[in-house]
Structures are given as C-alpha cells and as structure tokens.
Image 1 (tube, rainbow, N blue to C red):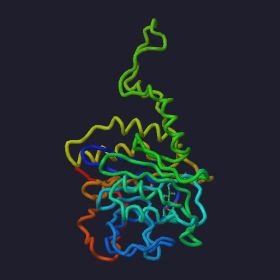
Image 2: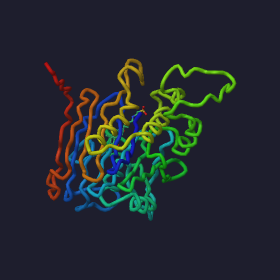
Image 3: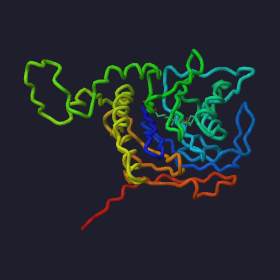
Image 4: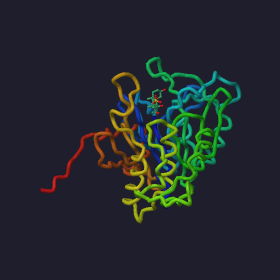
Length: 325
Ligand SMILES: C[C@H](CCC(=O)NCCS(=O)(=O)O)[C@H]1CC[C@H]2[C@@H]3[C@H](O)C[C@@H]4C[C@H](O)CC[C@]4(C)[C@H]3C[C@H](O)[C@]12C
C-alpha cells in the first residue's frame, strides 16, 4: 500500500510513502529540460519542464514512481489493483501508456488546471514498457502550489478526474468511496470529547487523546486514508523550512508500515521502503528510507537543467547514529 499527501504550510510539500515487499532499485532522478522523452503513441518531447523524483531507470528511460517539475506540479502513482483498467488504442485521443503518464503530464503542465485540460483528451492505453516490466494497476494524485490536488483513476467506466478536498490518496477503494467513508469518522478530534454517551453519568477522562480513540490504525488502505486525513488536517504550520519538513515527515510516518505487520504472501512483509517530499516552490526533494530515518535532500536547481542526460542520485540507505559521548 502507499500513501500520498500534499501538505500546505506556506510552501507546499508533496510526496508519498512507498510500501512494498520488494525494492525495484529506484533512485532520485533529475530529468533535465533537453532529455528526449520518447512516447509510444504520442509525439516525442525534445524540450520540456525539468523533473525531479523517485524513479527506476531502465534503458535510459526514467520510470517515475512520483516526482515534481520545476513549475511546482507534483504527481505520484499508487497501487489501484482491481479497479484499474487500461484501454486499447483510441483514434482521436492522446494514447499514453500508464508508465508514460508522469513524464507526459509533468513535462508540459505548469499546474493542476493545465493537467486537467490535458487529461480531457487522454486515453490510458494498454502498452507495456517491456515483457519484463508490464503495466502496474495505478491511480494518481496530482498537486500544485495552489494547495489543491486531483485524483486520476482509469476504470472500466472510463477516465475519471476527481477534486481531492483532503489532499490525501492511498489505495482501494475508488476515490469517491474513500471520501464517503470519512463521514464515519467525523467525530474524531484532537480534543477530549464531551460525554454524549450517558450525560447523566460522570465518566472519567482516564486518558489524554480520547478524541482519537476511534481513529483507525490498520495497515489497510481505508484505515490509512482516515488516519492520514486526520493527521494532515491537524498538522501545525512550521515557522521555517526545517520545521515544515519535520512536520511533513511526521505526517507521512504516521501511516508508515513497519516490517512484520503486513504479510502479503507467507513469510513476505510489505513495509515503507521510502518516504519522500518535494517542496513544490523550491524544487528541493527530501526523502527517508526504511533503514535510514535521516532526512536526505537533492536540490533540483543545483543540477544543470539544460543538459540532455539524466542525473542520478543513489539512495542513502545507511543509518547514521550521532553518538554524543
Ligand atoms: C507498487 C508501487 C505502488 C506501491 C503500492 O501501492 N504498493 C502496494 C502493493 S499492494 O497493493 O499492497 O499489493 C508502484 C508505484 C510506482 C510503480 C512503478 C512505476 O509505475 C514505474 C514502472 C511502470 C512499469 O509499468 C512497471 C514497473 C514500474 C517500476 C512500476 C512498479 C510498481 O507498480 C510501482 C513501484
């Protein structure tokens, strides 16, 4: 499972947890403006916005899991196994394969409004990257510096674009179902609730945090969605970048998966392999990994954005302890 968020705190921070039982060998990848993006069924892009994000590079092609462009538009692909449906080629549409969708949108759109326009003509076409790397069932969160986000889901009934009023995406069920489910939890609060159960009885508030007693805490996507909406919507705004980045990672780590808790096949456990976040205003990309909770950073504007070759930054996965004596 995965969780993706947009945290608005003056600047806007966008990214995700990637939860899985295997690692694909992903790294931080900067695609500069003059790298040639070849697409299977739509024209190539020789010049486009620069992109920074987490990707697996295969045959010199950046297969982005998530990322943002230099204009501050961010996008993440999350598992959507079951409802996801991709289509055959359709005349008169822009036929883009799901593995091409992140570069296709981030390469040419400045913001969510432009992405929305492009999506009107889009057909998510069933073309694999290769026999070894077949299509994944995904849906996407797209966000920008306005502090707003949308969800893109391609199902048997077509391509759907939803406003996302909570700026959170996890996995199943389809997004409208996730939103509907939130109503079941609207009583959850950071404050101690009044006794409405038996007002004539004196119930002792035996603990702090009773307002969140019914907050789900499971690894499943519906529980993470509710927990993350609560966490994000009560997150404080920091006074500076350091405080914002710290708050942001606390939000994501609130729904991280620890090893040993989610057995996906006998003996194999899904866990949060990495958490990342991009400051959409500055282009700084931050990440932690399961083994390394130190926050690492790669700065988009500290690489040469006018070249043609990808710039690769291998993940720093070693835990560093700061001994004090
Ligand atoms: C599995 C990842 C999503 C994380 C997630 O939701 N896991 C939950 C699994 S489950 O529901 O609990 O079973 C997704 C996110 C981005 C995906 C990758 C990106 O789309 C880029 C390429 C696309 C290729 O078609 C397939 C390999 C791939 C490299 C994808 C592998 C995999 O599907 C990734 C890594």
